[in-house]
Image 1: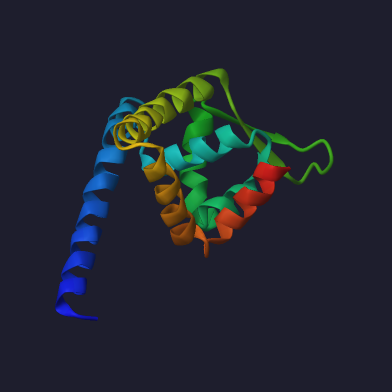
Image 2: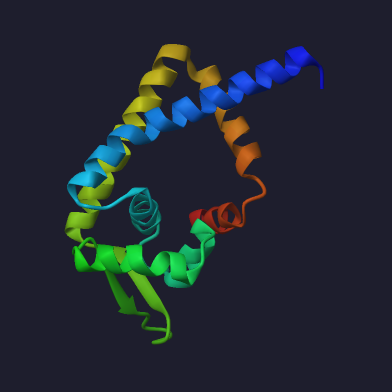
Amino acid sequence: MNTHNEEQLDEILTLFYFAYKTFTEEPDQILAKYGIQRMHHRIIFFVGRFPGLSINELLTLLEISKQALHAPLRSLIEKGLITSKASKQDLRVKQLTLTKEGKELERELSRVQKNKIEDIFGELGEEHRSSWIKVMEKLASSRVGRNLWCTKKKG
């Protein structure tokens, strides 16, 4: 790797960091009003995308341990944002869904982020959207959770 290339990559990493901070800043402020954090947001996000998601599927999507999920999920249930019910097919399996309040919060959080993305692509043009998607797909391609997401999205 030559010095110029390394400097460009350092710049890309720095931009990626600041972009991520911008992307999460407003949702983090909304979450703070509920006394919850970004981990809670990730849970709400995936349960919102896949109502009836099992706890094991959520663990796979988030790529975290049961211990890491336990406290934030319990908090979301206690706050009335998520419900956990036994599956009709297998009573041992807990299925998660957003409550009405959880759906409203998920819509608010996603709206903020969708608007940011739409504004940028509206300014830059559609050709940038497809390039950005290709970069994100390549970055995410090795994630186990992404593979489950693709399967659930099709099903």
